[in-house]
Structure formats: structure tokens, C-alpha cells
Amino acid sequence: MTAATVRRACLALALAGLAVAASIAVSAHAEQSARGGVRAAFRGSFAPSSIPRHRLAPISLTLEGSAGSKAGPPPRLRQITFAFGARGGLETAGLPVCPRAQLRNATSRQALARCGDALVGHGEITAEVPFNPTEPIAVEAKVLVFNGRQKGRPAAWVHAYSATPPASFLLPFYLEHPAKGTYGVLMRSPVGQSLGRWPRLRSFRITLGRRYRAAGEARSYLSAHCPLAPRFNRLSVPFARATYEFAPHPTIVQPIRRLCAVRE
Amino acid sequence: MAKRVAAALCLVLVLAVGAAAGAAELSRAEYVTQLEKICKPRSLATTRAVRGTRADVQSERFAVAAAKFAKARRIFVGTLSSIKKVPRPAADRATLSRWFAALERETAYLDRSIAALRAGDLPRFQSASAQFFRQGSKSNNIVISFEFDYCAFKSSRYE
Image (tube, rainbow over all chains, first blue to last red; front, side, top):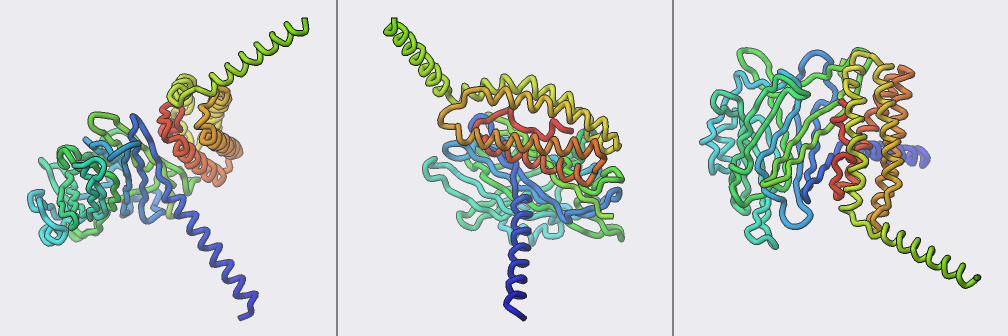
């Protein structure tokens, strides 16, 4: 191999690296909003990046967000709602259900041992406990998401556990299928009730998705399609929306758009 | 006579400097209030102008969608021209310059989207519209601390 060939190969690698870095920078771009001194960011992605035009296909969905304020810890979050996906994009039939009580005060290992077959997601959460506002206690917790049911309706139990400092909490997300509107799935959690007075949610990253078999059929917890007109193969479309309701105020609504690419 | 003219000129100069200093003293909150007053009716007009464009594009009514986007563009450019004239708080001038540059880029991507729609050039429209929405979000992030409402780019207006 000549020196020129090596140089060309290095240049090609460097350019490829730049292209990858640029694509990561674009996908990592977060939409932000601020109101009443409170700032909230939201971003999301799904995999695979291209999906069929007409038929629903299994996907995994990653939702990330953060909250903060100009000074001091983030304010207390009363409720958080995510909206995403297509109608029919959430399937829980035949998926094992984890009773909520099984997850209370459990470590991640215990939660998995008790409800592993109902696992539908994972991630991380960071929270602050401002007992002393100048030196808030930071909690970085691992998150496991389990399929649940509440009054006959689908729910997702977000179980968070931190070994140091020891903390375990459960955020219930109640799932709805709105009949109208842009999105097919709503996930609502009364975070304030679940976390209590002190912990403040700083950031989260949750990936949802699970393929399973039920009644002899392959199924997916989440599915999506890219219903573009026949002449389009990729288009920026509404992808998800986060609504952060802080106590006592403000409420910040952050919709995000992502590229929908058709896989023929 | 010459002394009187000189005195009058000095007075005019002092008043002009005073007025300029007064304008420079505009606080961020005052600036935001002034801009929001300008943006509010135009933002609502934009929402009305582009209503149904997503369905138009999906149904391949490209000329209709292009006309709606062109109307939105006229409102956008008019708004930009009006808000540029508002004196900027001294401490925020650099940030606001970056914001206005970002808004100009938004206009350019909107122009490209409209031209592509008119030409029926779908690959170009797909790329330009994605850049337009991404740029809108980038513009917002520059002035996030200003907490604009109507002056912020909202992708949901274009649905």
C-alpha cells in the first residue's frame, strides 16, 4: 500500500467520521421551550429509522427530556404527558402484566426477578432532592419499564432504582388511545403524587419497545408506519409531544418533528 | 447668531443621544413585550394561512400548499422586518443578532420549500422542509431565555 493510498483511506475515514458525527449532532438536537423561568427540553427517536408506508412494523422508541430553572433546582413536576405514535401503534394483548405492588421498594434486580416477563423498556432518570437548596442531593437512577394495568386499562410502570443514595420509586404512566388528534398513544403520569414533595425530576431517557409472541403470533409492544403519499419517501412529520406541568406553574408543551422515511 | 445655531445643534445632539441612550436602556422584558405585540397577530394569521397544508401535501395538491406557504412567507418576512426595527437591549445584542441571522436562514429554507413545491420537485421539498423545521428549532434555542411565545417558532403551526 502506497503512502498516497493510506492518506486517501485516512481522509475517507475522517470524512465518514464527520458524516456520522454530523448525523449524530442532528439527531441529538433537542427542542426546548421556556416559560416563567422554567426551561424544558424534549427529544426523541425511533428504530429502525425507516418503516413501511402502509403496514405497522415493530419499533422501539426513545424519549429524552430535561427540566431546569434559571436559579436553583428544577421546579416540582406535577404531571408529565407524552403523546406519540399512530392509532393501533400500542399492543399489549397477550403481554404479561406486572402488578404494581410487586415493584414497590424493589431494587432493579428484585423488580426484574418479579416482573421480568412484563419488561417493555429501560432507561435512566436523574432527580434532585433539594433538602438543602444550595447542596441538593443528586439521584441517578436506572429505569425499568413494565407492562401494567390500572382499572382494566393499559399502564406502564416506570421503576427507578438508585443504589447510591439508596432510592426506589415508581412512576405510573396511564395509557390512552385518543380518538382524535395527531397522535395515537398518550402516556400520562401524575409525577408529583408519585414522587412526593421533595424530589425534582432533572432529566430522563426512556426506551420503549418489546417483541413478544402471543397466541402463536409475533407481536410488538410498539408499532409504527410512515403513511406518506405515494410520491414521497421521506418527510419531516409530527413525531411526539411532551407536556410538562409544573407545580404551581407553568405548563410547557413541546412538540417535536422527525424525519419519517419509507421502507419499501 | 452662530452661537445660537451651535447651541441649538448641541441641544438637538444631546436630545438625540439621550433618545438613543433611552432606547439602549430597554430591558429584556420590555423588548420581549414589544416583540410579542408585533408577533401575536401575525403568528395567528400564519396559523390560519397554513391550515391544512399537511393534508394538501399528502394529497399532492402542491400548488395549493405552495400558495399557503407563500402567504406564510409574506407574513414571516413582514414580521421579521418589523421586529428588526425594535431597539435591542444592549446586553442581548449579540444573541439577538444570531437569532435574526437564524430567522433569515429560516426564510431561505421556506423559500426553497415553496420553490420545490411549485416545481413539483419532491426530493428537494422533502429536504428543504426538513431543514426549515430544524432551523426553526435552532432559532428557538438561541433565544430560549427570552421566553418568547408568539415570536417563537412552533412547528405545530404548520400542520
